[in-house]
Amino acid sequence: MKDKKFFEISAELMDRIISAAYGDAGFFEKMKIHKLAGEHSEVRELFDEFRNTANSVHSIKPDECPETVINNIKPVSKIESKSSSFMFDIYTAAFSRPAISALAVVILAAIVVLSVSLNNGSYNGYSREEIEKANLQTRQALALVSNIFSKTESSLKNDILVDRVSKPINTGMTTVNNLFIDKEKKNEN
Amino acid sequence: MKLTETKYQFLIQQYKNNIYSYALYMMKNRMDAEDISQEVLIKIWQNVGKFNILSAKTWIMRTTHNLCIDYLRKRQSSYSKEYSIDEEFLESFADGLEENNPLIKTHLKMMTDKVKEAIQNLPEKLKSVFVFYEIQGMKYREISKSLDVPLNTVKVNLLRARKKLQKELKHYERQEIF
Image (cartoon, rainbow over all chains, first blue to last red; front, top):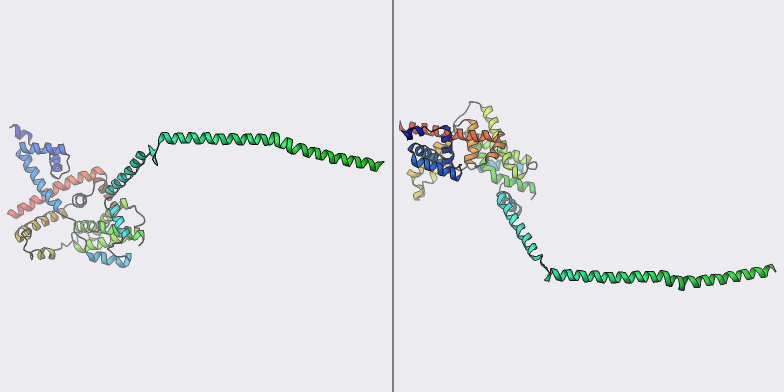
């Protein structure tokens, strides 16, 4: 009596049975329906009916397109129906299973990133500390060279140009000036 | 070889059977299915540069569906069912393999034909969703885009189609018994 009341199969339960029979339902939902089917013959019967139909439907493969159809469009498209070119193979490999291709690319990228990050600690066989030390020494050497250049510049400006170049030129110019002045005085007399 | 040609060849190889098969279910005869397939393949060639390869399937199946609807409207009720001899089926009897046992094979063939006929007899809206999902293995979202209907409509129509198909097959069984 209890069973009969329960198994006026509701529309909602029927939909769930159909989904399970066609393999759409999730794992737990399938388990629930299987459990119900085991307990109640009405559910079992309905489930089996739909599952048999689903199996028959799923065994049907898409009909093959006749070659005549492909041959008939050759004059329009002006290309062969079949190809074995390298480009075609690449295209097929990449796009017939885009998810797999994407996964392969992601794995490849991950390998590259991983190998780069693993090698990051020692570059060309040198440790990070050695590289930092070398960097410091280079900076110190450059600072020394810079210091020498600035000293040279200041001595060139202050000492060499003033004492060794400007003064002799000034003296020479004064001598020449005096000579001109003397000559002018003589001419006036 | 140009990239466009490669793309076109790839699309043909990938979808020619889907196009033809869908057209055959919708039109119920090979002549119309071949004409539609041809038209779709030409349309693909004309538009091959315009669509993304990843969304090509939706575009192709929508074009096929629309052409089928156009043909059905033109043909209206002048539908003639085609009975043809399946040469491949007859040839398979020639080799003596157990799996090609005529009795088993005939039974399986009859079963498949019965299911195919029941699918063909489904109402158009239910049939298109059913064929896309169950025969062509398309996803709900792809079907929704191809038929330009909401996702829920696809789900509801698929369920209705399954129920209707079950009813049709029961009807056949009863006819066989009597």
